[in-house]
Length: 84
Image (cartoon, rainbow, N blue to C red; front, top):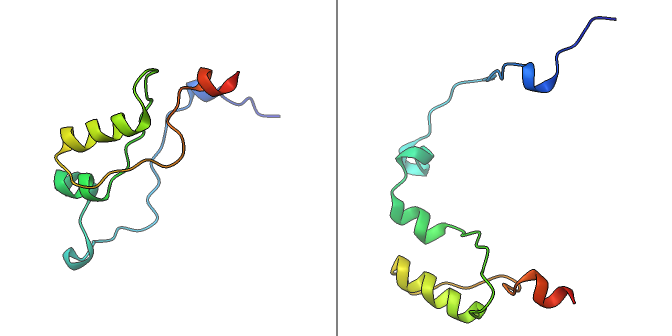
């Protein structure tokens, strides 16, 4: 049986099946996307601290990013609060 390497000893290898170009009518490469597009269509994964309500944190996000619409999916309450 051949000796195999441990996962941390392997060198990662990028495999590209095909090269393709994105038609500019249908989008752009992520690194070329304007920040406004990320804000408009993005999702923020937020670890809310204990104390402020979900509504308060959503209001802060709206103010910081300068957007009119923001919301949250599910509870943002701290784990320890609902675990007991």
